[in-house]
Amino acid sequence: MTDAATAAFVRAIPKAELHVHIEGTIEPEHAFALAERNAVTLPWATAEALKDAYRFDDLQSFLDVYYQVTAVLTTVADFADIVTAYFDRAAAQGVRHVELFFDPQSHTGRGVPMSVVMDGLWSAVSRSVETHGLTSSLILCFLRDLGAEAAAETLREAEPYLDRIVGVGLDSAEAGHPPAAFHDVFAAAALFGLRRVAHAGEEGPPAYVVEALDALGAERIDHGVRALEDPALVARLAEERVPLTVCPLSNVRLRGVDSIAQHPLGRMLDAGLLVSVNSDDPAYFGGYVGDNMIALHDDPRYDLATLRVLAENSFRSAFLDDDTRTALVGEVHRHFERGVQGA
Ligand SMILES: Nc1ncnc2[nH]cnc12
Ligand SMILES: [Zn+2]
Image (tube, rainbow, N blue to C red; front, side, top):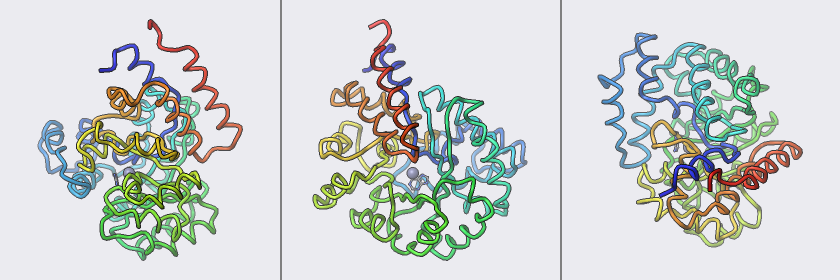
């Protein structure tokens, strides 16, 4: 096990978080406080009962809970508050830059206007440097199980707010929903000057990773762990330096892998892939990004030198300008020069 001083050191490593769904950061107690504030009835009696429901068999069984909890979000203040609560935790875990996913369709589909979602998220994101000492941006994700037409409609609704988002992504139930169906909406997003990322190879086959790259022009792959099943794809990802945002605790909780010891992250690093560590839905999966790194470090394969590579990779994979990237990698360097205090 990682000792307390080393855990504090790992948690404080400067890092970027590139794969975190804001709706997946609502802690159970906060969900119940928001439910009460908005007179929303959740299908669980207490926060404890909700936590008891966090036993997942796969991605879908998690999404079923996740979408029900999002119903507590109804006002501008709610969206601002969940971002602020996430920033509080992220800043305490060394996060210097975050690219936040949000799922507008999970709100507009319940009658919450896009303007409420955008104004709430933006009020916190636009002030993150002053409030938390970290830079932040927003990535609008399309829910792939709702289809391409709904995604196109969502992009149209988001048009007045394009200066508040850095890119678009693709998430939700992966199996049976190949990326290529979203070619046109991703092409339209590219014409707007937006960056493109996509969840692929979480539960879906390696072919979905290939499609995300070729049909969507994805610049970064979220998860991508199943890419390892296809050696030609691994060679391509390594050659093209395609960033993969890997979420170890998420993969364990959603039963993609049995344990951290079984997790393919080590093999991905060995294959020369540009991988970073991320939290995905930290309120549900047992930890924020620093906690994911500590869980890795409990396994001797992930020594401090490896965690340093992962932290540097997070900045190398981010949508940052070169000067900012260099400065942030320099912060990682200085953190390791100072070393574990008391060691
Ligand atoms: N891990 C995940 N995969 C796909 N969609 C998601 N939405 C929130 N978390 C997700
Ligand atoms: Zn995700």
